[in-house]
Length: 318
Ligand SMILES: NC(=O)c1ccc[n+]([C@@H]2O[C@H](COP(=O)([O-])OP(=O)(O)OC[C@H]3O[C@@H](n4cnc5c(N)ncnc54)[C@H](OP(=O)(O)O)[C@@H]3O)[C@@H](O)[C@H]2O)c1
Image (cartoon, rainbow, N blue to C red):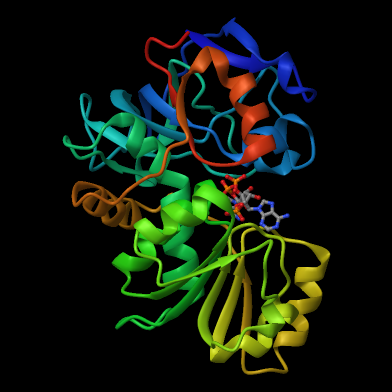
């Protein structure tokens, strides 16, 4: 089968089309014929060697986490999914993941995907997978936003995670303050954000008068200690990136009435099903563009520079 791969870690332009054997599913696994994928910062972080732990150290290195496609083979002990089903989800962000979605087929665990609704395109399903679950698991699970709504602040609303988080915040009935820049901020207004803050103009976190139940720092540029005085008692600061500073903040937060968490997003079927139902209802996945898989290197360079959500057409894209 065809795949876009690199011979090892290095610059993005080492990505090229290669031929590799078609993989066979093991116990609990399925082989998916990939129709669409999407670009994530994790793709360039692994390839450039800054976060190698997000993927197995394969050579050649086939990347791509989000996928939507059709099950074409099932291994032993597979339940809940059959050959011919359209499914979507994402591969694990971790050293155990040897598969990649920038390829004609991939191997996924049957309990890490969900059925794609017929009305939702493969490109939108793939583009919503990581980012949508990152938002759900950060705001609802780690943040514990009150079920009847609550006050939420999201940073980086131009980005892949931040832009879908705006629509998901409204599904979770949050009163939303969106922090971002330019067109992304304007889009957040259109998608229902209640308060807009231009990150270049301020005010800075410590100067805000409002109190929040959850601050979701998708941009991963802030620290809990900058926000702790704007958090309600029991409120949480959730970041998308671990750091040494995070460990120190976690320890310090134990002596306060606020919480700090770092997201480790998982492709959980129940969350994918919830996301699928919202996509059917029209949840917007703000896409910057859709590119053929042969242009993944250029797409990743753009993502690294600008951010945002880029879908990848894999079927017919080589
Ligand atoms: N831990 C996990 O499980 C997990 C899961 C998914 C993603 N992630 C990580 O989450 C991060 C965001 O992912 P993404 O897909 O949304 O990335 P992205 O598309 O590159 O978006 C990042 C956004 O952050 C904002 N930003 C950039 N530089 C900034 C700065 N200096 N100050 C403040 N804001 C800035 C920008 O939005 P504005 O211009 O609107 O501010 C930008 O669009 C990445 O690091 C990714 O690796 C982690």
